[in-house]
Image (cartoon, rainbow, N blue to C red; front, side):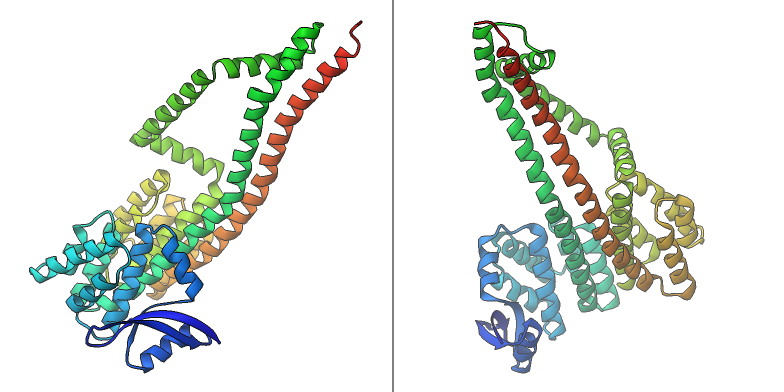
Length: 397
């Protein structure tokens, strides 16, 4: 049995906090529900402390807001009362203000989705459109459940990608720092020794020492050049042409990983929207917005056109040549059987698993490449210095 801390509310809106002993988190939720209270948050004490100490992101706040609002609506509380409770229990000051603003807007007679749309930095257009569909169909609690699943899977995938790239990033930074220290601090000391002793140095040593002295003397020019180049590059890829060409390059360089990532994003978004009752054309437009690669996103325009002409999405997607054959086959089967929304979710789950394998394979290949590259550069520097030292032993004294 484990100890869990919890925050809950009674049916009359009273907030409660405490600890409970249960086999797991799911069992703790059931115990609280059986006691007639609505659990808002369940966590092991050390996880709760960790959350308080960690920096909170807007995506994390959005996920918590969606989860807690879904629980309250499922418990039968009206929307305004649920939002009032959330405004009181929210740990984020920014989110607390936003919830209060939404609550005020609703009490003034505005729709929930319209109130969310006033905060586009927190609630993306996809989120607003799904809640609007839930309001129209009278199934807002069900839609919030779908949104919660969508946000959790998206967060999990993003965290997996970030955690997989941490070690290669540390290797690159550490290796680069080592090379800079060698060139700007260690080698200039050898340069003074070689100058005092005189004699002819090997060509590789001369090249390294010239580069080292130039870097030490004109480091500011190198830094300014790198900064200027970075600013120019960022400005270029912000333009439509630059963004498209950069995305085309990334697609060629890491096509397998990017294709699986965009397939999973598109299919999960489209499937979630369709399950929530959003019309196909609107769902396609929103699903296109979550695709970050412009090359793939532009191909979806043809799918939108085909859907408007009554061709469905399986045939236009096949003609676009941007998604893997297996995904296209599964989408075609889903369309033919009338279970397109469920099949799209299955496609997303399949390619999210495949993406994790592809990322693991990419990182396992990238790590030795980085180590080998840094080793070759450092090895060249060390060998050049050793050759110069050996040549000094041949000088007459």
